[in-house]
Length: 188
Image (cartoon, rainbow, N blue to C red; front, side, top):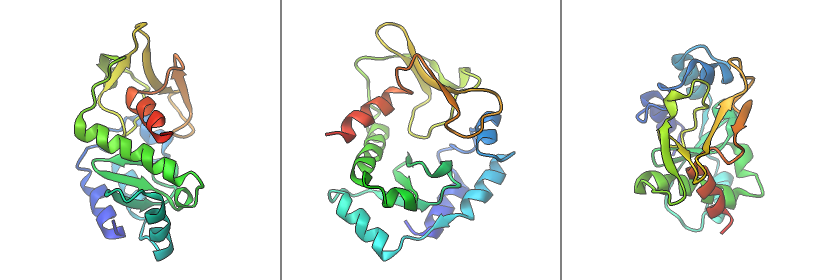
């Protein structure tokens, strides 16, 4: 995607990812409102250079998917997906693990499209029932539990998180079946 397409997607927030952020999510992103976050992001969307396009093409196994280039102000530069778009930063393009990262993110797009059902996990409750839960666009709206009835999710370590990774890993089982599956698939 070019810079303008990325800006339009962020502004429209079609998947309501930004609109649904909690006050804790906004605090972790060092903004006070969703509008402030959208303005911050849209001022930092980027166009790909020819060299970046070449690197991606060489690492994407000829898969067809949309990629948007964002800087480290948006989600601290962490790769993620929204709808059918993979968001990456220039640092990720230059990462020696780019091929694995793209496989991981593509797994999230496929999970979203195919509404993945998880054999080893059951739905426990809605994510919005947990006060300090961290927003992650690669997940669905549920908290899952494993066969031992232990829930999987990450929460902020306080009501004033220093960033999006200032978290506590509940039960140390992983954040969500989507993430567990994507990490497994990236290694194939």
